[in-house]
Amino acid sequence: MKEDKRFRYFLFAALAVSLVALYLARNVLTPFAIAFALAYLLDPLADKLERWKLSRTLSVSTIIASFFLLVVIALIVLIPLLRIQVEHLAANLPDYMGKIMAWLQPILDQISLIEPAKIKTHLKEIFEKLGTVPLTALGSATEMLWSSLSGLMGIILMLVNILIIPVAMFYLLRDFDGINRKLVQLIPPKYRRETVGIVKEIDEVLSGFVRGQLMVATLMSGLYTLGLFLCDTPMSLFIGPLAGYANLVPYLGLICGFVPAAILTLLQHHDVMSLLGVVIVFGLVQMLEGMVITPRVVGDKIGLHPVVIMLAVLVGGELFGFVGVLLGVPAAAVLNVLRRRTIKEYKKSTLFR
Figure 1 (cartoon, rainbow, N blue to C red):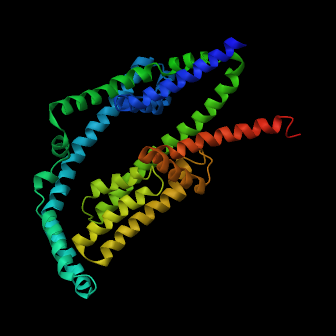
Figure 2: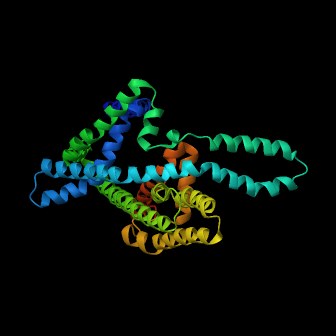
Figure 3: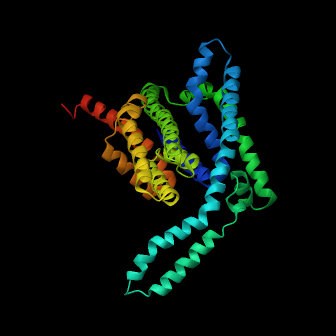
């Protein structure tokens, strides 16, 4: 009995030390965390290829090669187009600032309690500085990335992290099922069946939700980009994906996408009809997402009320910042599975009778 207690204390202490170590090494572990997340998401595809009589190693190699090939093709196609849009925005920035000043001038002229001259002077200084931003500062994404790195060590570390992700992803994805089996063997036999059942239920909820949400975000990115491109909105190739993938955080995509799209469209076309086109694009995509895309792709896998989802996002953000915003809904889904299990066991117990 004493040995059991000692072992439990040792287990809790080891778990606490491991959590502290993980927190302290979080920056180093980031590429491994990304690799694990990708391996987790792609494991069902690897299992499917195995059922088609491909070896696990060949299946994983095919998946990783296809994945990174698609990323490279997307970058080759999109970066030149994005650069054209960025350069166009930079070239028109002084004109945009002039239009904003022209719109604000009547308002400033009517302000009497605050000194209008000082306000106008400060605004002019801000707009002049913004208008003199060199084209090179708003050049290609590659140039912006390199300029933000501090020295050779930063470049080397970045390259190492980029290389670690596919390598770690390969080994994790190849050995994913084996790792799962070994972890199951560590569970005490009398708790194994129940624990595995709970973990499987959590896995079904999380995997279905995460994969579904990524698919929804990708579809929304494409729809937003196409719609904004047809509306001749500046930076549509940037705003579309931003709005789509920001939608992974509930309601953030609408804010991140609509506000810049509306402002840039007004600055370029300065007419209400162009703005109406942007409103229609976001309205239609949101309607499709709520009525067609999400119900068909994700369904009710997560089993949470919309109010609970909003609360999970807010609480996660308050406790852990941006990471908490991203993980708030999945964490709530896990707690919901545990809640259902607890209620089920409670109804079986003598307390309920």
